[in-house]
Amino acid sequence: MTRAQLDKQPDEVAAMFDRTARRYDLVNDVISLGQVRMWRKAVAAAVDAGPGELVLDLGAGTGTSTDAFTTLGARAIASDFSLGMLRTGVRRHGGNALSGDGVPFIAGDALRLPFADDVFDAVTISVALRNVHDTEQALREMLRVTRPGGRLVILEFSHVKYGPFDLVYREYLMKLLPKVAKVFGSNDDSYEYLAESIRDWPDQRTLARTIQDAGWERVAWRNLTMGIVALHRGFKPA
Image 1 (cartoon, one colour):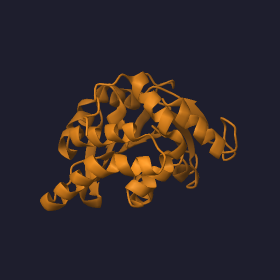
Image 2: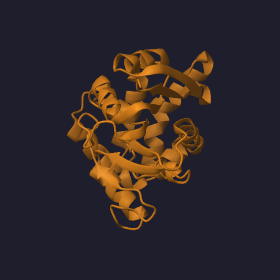
Image 3: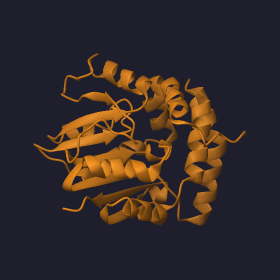
């Protein structure tokens, strides 16, 4: 397999996900063996947003992850830099940028969020932080738009801590993942990028330090599915 280019510019990454949007949710469900549904529930529980609270779901794609917050009574905004993803999400929510359940779909760059300071009770991003060109700058932007005392929840692919399983997982990731995506009619190039970006992403402790360096406090994490993904949480100083 040719190594995917990990130095892609933001417009190149956005265009890659535009091409993947139509089959994105289906392929994610297949390649994760259904685990993605459990991960979404874990994110919603960690965000713990209730009635009257406002949640920003970054890297929301088609809005599948955003729905978990509105079912708990919170208001939520789905934001992504891929217009193809957002268009697919809008169609699935009835064809309007403001969906029938009150979720706005807003195009936004994580490095320059189109929101005022101190707006959101919680900001969350799931398996999309790897795709941002400058991780720490994005974390500072998330801090800026979060109200004092508000919370950050990040779900991201991470490092498996059990050696034998890690070897099997990486073999699957690098060799089979793009092939599975191709079978289901998705853009296999984007899943080569996905596999490479997961392999090169920092481990749990390193990401926690980066979150702290960006200004968040009380940063902690826990592994899901043996560390295939990790759930990081932090709070904006009050």
